[in-house]
Amino acid sequence: MTLIDEATGTQKVSAAPRSALKRRRAAEARAGYAFLTPWLLGFFLLTAGPMIASLYLSFTDYNLFSPPEWIGLKNYTMLWNDPQYRKAWQVTGTYVLFGTPTKLIAALAVAMLLNNTRRGQGLYRSVFYAPSLIGASVSIAIVWKAMFIDKGIVDQVGQIFGAAGGGWVGEPKRTMPMLVLLTVWQFGAPMIIFLAGLKQVPNELYEAAAVDGAGPVRKFIKITLPMLSPVIFFNVLLETIHAFQIFASAFIISNGTGGPARSTLFYTLYLYFRGFVDFRMGYASAMAWILVLVVGLITFVFFKTSKSWVHYSGDSK
Amino acid sequence: MSLVSAPVDAGTATYRSDESAARSEVLRKKHRTSERWKSLGFHVLVLAIAVVVLYPAAWMLMSSFKPSSEIVGSVSLVPTNGSFDNFTKALSGIGGVSFWRFFMNSLILALGSVVGITVSCSVSAYAFARIDFPGKTAWFSIMIGTLLLPFHVVIIPQYIVFNQLGLVNTYVPLLIGKFLASEAFFVFLMVQFMRNLPRELDEAARIDGAGHVRIFRSIMLPLMKPSLVTSSIFAFIWSWNDFFGPLLYLKKPDLYSLPIALRLFVDQTTTSDYGAQMAMAVLALIPVLLFFLLFQRYLVEGVATQGLKG
Image 1 (cartoon, rainbow over the protein chains, first blue to last red):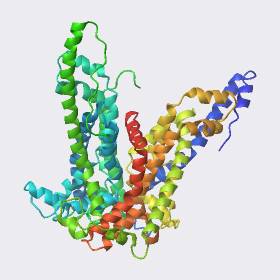
Image 2 (image 1 turned 180 degrees about the vertical axis):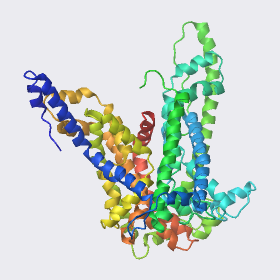
Image 3 (image 1 turned 30 degrees about the horizontal axis):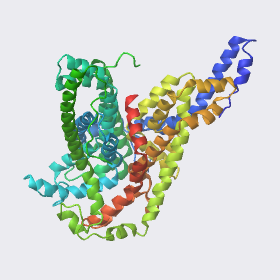
């Protein structure tokens, strides 16, 4: 790390101000890059470099043991015709489309419920946040599985309401609701972000609206939603991107198979099987790049459309 | 922990004349009773949600004391034949490796992550928050971009390189990223925190002739302690729960961290031995829950700021 001697820089100001200023700037630049070194190294060695490498690999056939062989777009055309790959998209897409909105609506609803000055706020916030910390862990996946097995606790409760028994874990049609429930259970993290956003909505707006005779629904649509839109934008974007990357829970619940009947063959699971079980590194790289492009496209669309629905109040940047 | 509703004081304003005071007293009483009912309704509703949310965790904990036959068949939380049998089974280890070995492995990885992340991310964050250098905005946007990047696009080449370097079955691949600030979330968190610290402090130090290294060490680091604590807790918990990394890089059972040991345990025990699985799941979560109980305020606040300044 370079040590910067500010003192010499300031002494020269009277003699030759311009060159001193230049030297000062150069010193600042050197200091900046010196402090940034860990991140820059990490970025080039662990992110940018590997990204380029996996882009190259996606055009090759590579199994870790013999050198990569250039096959052009073949991995991509094979993916297009791969029924398991299509299934993986279908599973992941369903999960994102159902899991994310449900989770966020639950988060917003509970945040609005908690947005007052009554007692016990801190306690409730913490209780609701706890699942977000442990929800993606192997422990909870095991618990979830045990809850949803044949004659398990969920079956027992379900029968009271007339639901069919037989367990959820082994039934292809029921694994998705089970995993969606698991993600909805983790509504706490976005809830806390919503709550922090709600606290910043000035109360005068609601008071003014009340004077004008607006009811709760109108207040919600005309005040809460627009004022909260930057936070909604942030939550929707992050939760969507995270949902694409679910791995541990699906891996544990399906016993590392993506089953039953490929009903939990999430994108990341299929990528793991192809890349690290079959060692088809080129094929898996192509999958990874398509995921990046899809996530990038979604992010781009979010930012593009955000101008029309995300409202930033005047004084913030 | 009083969960019973306490009515919010409707207002302690002083009233001008007697008649209006009397009238407002009636109104206030009315308001108070309706507020009391509202408050009761609020707590009943929130408590109901809390029960649903906490149920799986409570069920896990109680099941770990039950024999497996009782876990499958019964809705009741309280075990009728409670015992520590499941825990003795879980603690006896898997395939000749003791539970405490896995625990230590996880601990080494988690503490390594904490050290790596606090050191590398605070240094990098200082550059973004306090030094003006050409290209800063561009690097900052790139850093934010990596927050959104699915990590799958980098793991394949990373695995190939670490494999060629003979680093599979070591902790290097799992820790190196932490020492190179590649978890942008923490850099971002610290940049946001530092930006809110008064600039006058470091300007004064600069006039006194302190360079960036001194300013960082003697002014910034002590002031940014809250963000270092938040980062450490998250770093610990995320490393503790990490499944994918250890699954890729650790192939020898005596190197296993708890999550993959847990997976091995589930694979090896007969599927019906849910009791022992629950016990092991509980044991694996204890440090996380401990951190949560001790530092919940930091965690909740960390999440809240992350969203607001995004």
